[in-house]
Length: 257
Image (cartoon, rainbow, N blue to C red; front, side, top):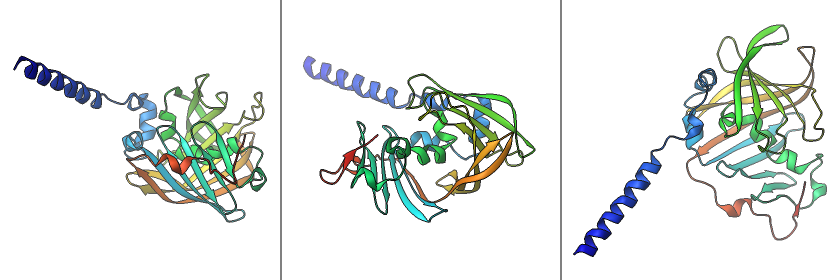
């Protein structure tokens, strides 16, 4: 009888501990008040924190090339299916199928989460190790925008020295522009680019831009268009995708940088 009572007490303590653990607030919900204001303008952003997986379709408007993106949000495993290639990150390496020559970009690793990252702003800046703070207003094409500066801890991502500024639409309070510099290929690079966010659409309580347009940026003004992409079929789900989706095929695939 004493053994049974001890077992019941032990089990009760175990389930109580599990219940306590499950109700602990996610630290990503604890964001600066100014940043929360921007996040709130994009819907119930706690849904991003709760989601386990994310997928979307994308078209490059310059050549109508299509891609389908699949991401596990907890471990950032990635799979991209395109017409002539597949790219994946299985958690240990980035791979491409059928061969490296199928992808014409400079770096498969740089590309594999590029559009996922841009498309997920501002939600993705709730990640641990990311710091968002209000800064002085920024001008784009003569219009002043409330601005947030984004910085990263030294061990975050492949390019922690990248610079990002989120600029707020003065009329809607939503993200209007992202100014950014890329240091993946050149750690000393400080040249800023501009990315415009337009035509927001609801996806399960969160909003995402239907169109993103990249511009060269100089003297607070946009110059030539660098690229334009459009998005559809955006899904956030509360179950992780199977690891097999992200595994490198046994044949006709190579690890790539």
